[in-house]
Structure formats: C-alpha cells, structure tokens
Image: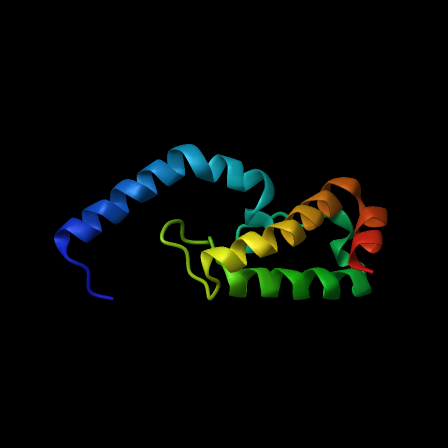
Length: 107
C-alpha cells in the first residue's frame, strides 16, 4: 500500500494515541486472542482444551489481528467486529474463570 506523507503522518499519530490510551485496555481483554503476544492459561496444555483455544485464537486473528498495532489487519468490517464482541467477552470470562468456565462456554 502506497501512502502519501500526510497519510503516513496521520497513521503515526493515530498509532501513538492508540499505544498511549487504547492498547492498555486491549491488553487486558483482546490481545490474548487477537495478537501473537497473548498469555495462555495454565490449562492450555490439556489436549482437548488446547485444540479449542488454538481454533478460537486462529479465528480471532483472522477477524482482526492486533499484533502490529495500528492499523490492524483483518477481514472483518466494523459491524462484524461489533457482532464478534460478545464471543470475545465470553472468552475473556473463560480465561478469568478457569477451565470450568471454558468448558461451560465452549459447549
């Protein structure tokens, strides 16, 4: 993608603001699934659970990948991202609640 100087400067400014104000919030909920910098729960090593988590993370990163900060990479439109937010919320709850919560949510 070829960007003009003004567009490059605008992207840099947006990324600086993103890093300062938004990324800290995303780090608590979103980046575990939507980046390659995620923290996996201890029960991730259980074979069936590992497969489910890997599948969900793969789908999440196809939708939107936040690994390299702004601009994000993905195939989803803003409307589709809003529709996905409920699933993201359930997966964040799963990570906080332990394996019992994940089994309940994933079935």
